[in-house]
Image (cartoon, rainbow, N blue to C red; front, side, top):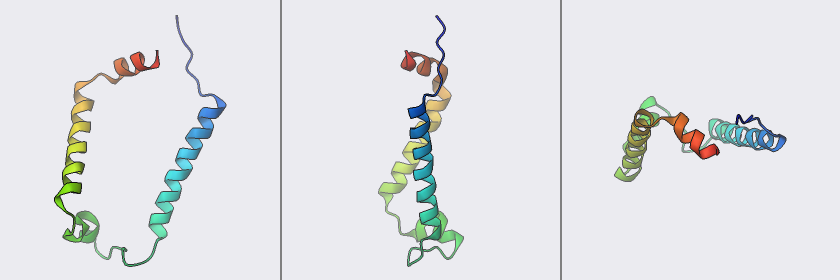
Length: 84
């Protein structure tokens, strides 16, 4: 039995809300002034060398797990089972 998966009106509302919140956060951070403003690319890329090991370890672990998951699992099978 073939199912037709289409967006309903509430799906569009949620999708638009998520896009709006994401854009608002990006604009807020782009126009925010103060002492957190980066002056050089080094400050942006390495956090002015003031980051502790904890956020760096979390970033590396999440990137690694995301890459491994994408290589090892067939997403179409996962989504097919999840939608049912």
